[in-house]
Length: 348
Picture 1 (cartoon, rainbow, N blue to C red):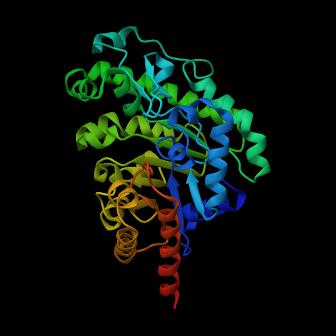
Picture 2: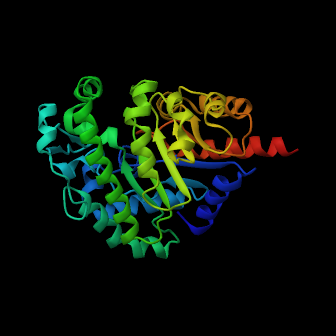
Picture 3: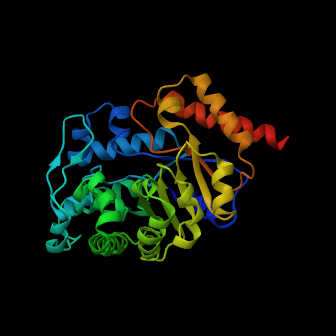
């Protein structure tokens, strides 16, 4: 993000803003297709990765692309440090196969070293190699990023096996989540050590939307509280675009101050649960409207969200999830135009 964008984000978090801001979470599902290359080309080429991200931020200077120049390898990124077979189809989303066949294998699992294991060194080196060019265009590395502990653990065991184990293998579940949480803390601290410009933290975990209130208190709150306190930064963003009403109740307790939530929930629903101090990021349907809908569908969706949002001073206007493939430049421009029009009408 540029310095002026970062300062505006800090203002939005600390005191709110009457100026509507657009922030879009973008990564390998959207950027390469929009730029005209395959996902594999985007992931393996530093040059193409940089060119694609530079084109996006320069074509849409009023949009905050978050976390900004995201160096990642899809869902393979963090789980790869624990082992496991990563699959990279030419134009498929990266996929990692579960590496453990049973919960008993948790007992012999060893913690990874984020400075050398899996794909993590490549994440860091890509940013090092491109940091100067980003800086020449006015952008800095702003966020330390990681998938969350339940997300990573589910990729090690398989999602169904992991969720069942929260009930049937509680001791081993805590052992696994303790190891993964310690790894995440090490990983985000390492990112901030390498890139002192980092002043934000983004944690992404959809698995927390699949468990009930009691399990949330036991398996989510303690570990996420540690993670959000791992580095001292003013921007602490949680992405959970699965069911998120339980999450909303506990955001401040965990330490998150931006919540990127599912389009299945309204701003009012989430605001009532999380209180007035959290920035809400959403809430346009990403697939059905932003990608597959017409321009008129998008305008209607934005208008409805605007008029039903209540207090708009702590909203980061976005898709209710990551930007999916096939979202056109026209749709992003319409998003910006419609918000400017609504803001102008409200100020009259």
